Amino acid sequence: MFKLLLNNWQAKLGSILLATLFYINLQNSKILVRETNIKIEYPKLTGGMSIAKGSDTTFPVKVEGVRDYVNFYTPSLKAYVNPAELRPGENMVSVARIGGIPAGLRVTRLRDKVKIIVESNVSRTLVLDTKFQGDPPKEYLKSSHFVSPASLVVVGNPTQLEKLGHLSLPPIPLKDKTKTFTQKFKVPDLPAGLRYRDNQKEVSVTVNIIADSSTPGESIVLGVPVRCQNLDKNLEAEFSEQEISVKLQSKTPLRSIQIIKGLSASVVCSHKYDSKTRKILPDGKPVLAKVRLTKSPTLKSVDIQSYFPDRISILYRIRPDLDQTGDGSEDGSDGSSDPNSEEPLPEPEEE
Image (cartoon, rainbow, N blue to C red):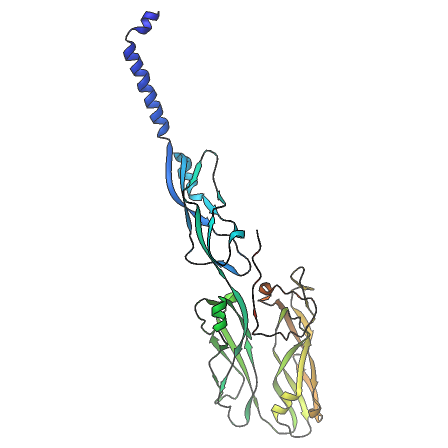
């Protein structure tokens, strides 16, 4: 039996070696080694910081494994960095982890560090300057005007923001204007490195024109502005109507501008901002408020018969720059904060 096994042993051994080589080659043909660049998943930054252009967007790795695994899973691999290591300026940081690696796939890093540039922004609330050209025709005058929105929040690089003095709209001509009108403008252009929050594109200005009448008797005065009393400094109030019309009886001749200046319309803005929950109390739904009309002692001879509307809807919003100031005062105020104050954003939080 043993002699039979030794017959042509050279040929038999060659067959075994050849079969082994074929098997090894077959197994190796299923293994794939690939060098590729995977996407860096930028972390969400707080405190007004953001990832700037010029940062690395990919990270080089070597992927080894069964061919099907490599082809299927490589596109979903992502590199992550620790946001706590990022500071304003240029950062050279290590990749904290690589996500999306299944069992049976080996990923080797081909570089130690990645470059991430971080910009730090501040915000500033600027009031829009409005100018007028000329005067209305004789016996007409401009009583008031409203800008919507009255101010804009500018966000960007602190150095560029310091150079920005104010925001101005083009002059509005009043010649030949005999009635109230609204004019719309594109928001003023900003220097490079600055932008408007909320992607504001347009500003509208409503100008009230009234007849400068001095005839005694019954008349209707348009354009008496409505003001907000006791507005929480952390909130903004949007009125359904910004002005009211007043029907009155005058026993003596009075100019319209005297009446406009002698009348005062207001509503009580009672909602508050809760700094703990960061919500509006009692809620953020529109509320109906009664308009209160008062007159100055100079209008003793004027009898107020009625005014319209006597109630307006108020929609409260959290001040747009509040999340950057971190100031959530709970006490009520008249909302008379400096609109041109520049406030730094809070430091980034570690995640």
